[in-house]
Image 1 (cartoon, rainbow, N blue to C red):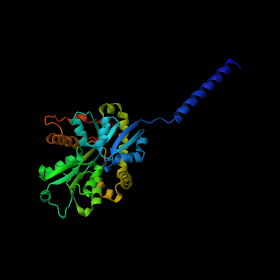
Image 2: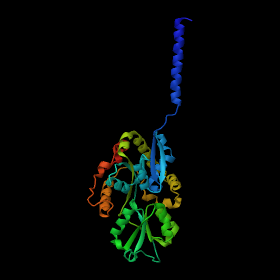
Image 3: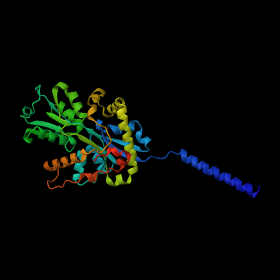
Image 4: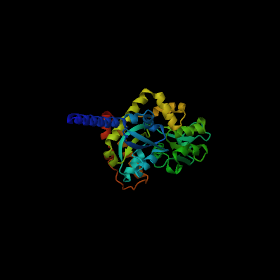
Length: 334
């Protein structure tokens, strides 16, 4: 064999080896980056569940591990503790964490719930008169440290009910329907689906459902630790694009979206349909977020949750909007 033939043979072998390696690399599936996302079992977190169910996260090139909690504040606690990368919760637990010195970045909001409910046992009355009802001292169950407690405070302020006329009982969200059904309390202030569970189990004719959307609207946000958010902006962008796809899916497919959320929350499909419109299920950063947190911070000082001398921080500094501005600039309205 001539030197030319030998060189040609080696060249062919090298080409085949390189080609095979490239082919193998293409066939070997690339491991997707993983984000640990905590969320409450509630319709307000519906975008995350829809994005997972419809494979929008994987379509965007990210693996999202969903970890479910009975309340968003527990997801936030897990984030602070280091077992999550991102938490879905109402804005109030985030405000409390920040005002107490925790370093947290809000990277977006995925829902605004238009109005909470105060569910009160009728005790034989057919019409609700707030002054007459609270002539007797009442026990009201709520989740202390969560958005429902702030709503409760705003409710009593709105109707000029003195603190001597009620007693606050701290309950887990999933226990709220139980304590009103077994008459342990006179009422509950909670978010969906637990208020609906309470009405259904108590009997719709046995309770008053007092709503006032002007009192408070819960803003459900995505939070992360600042250093993680800074280092994972690409991953956050992928996550947000998946949420944006889920938002579009909700608008185009409300029935299927409700089916997914109904299965996730175990909320009756007919009941979910009736309350569906109170959830915006939109990816955004709204102008009202900062003003709401400022109002809550003052409430925290007035009620002794933090020392009265505590300075209210500039909450704008705790919002990391760069990834959302890249994904959906018009969604940032701060």
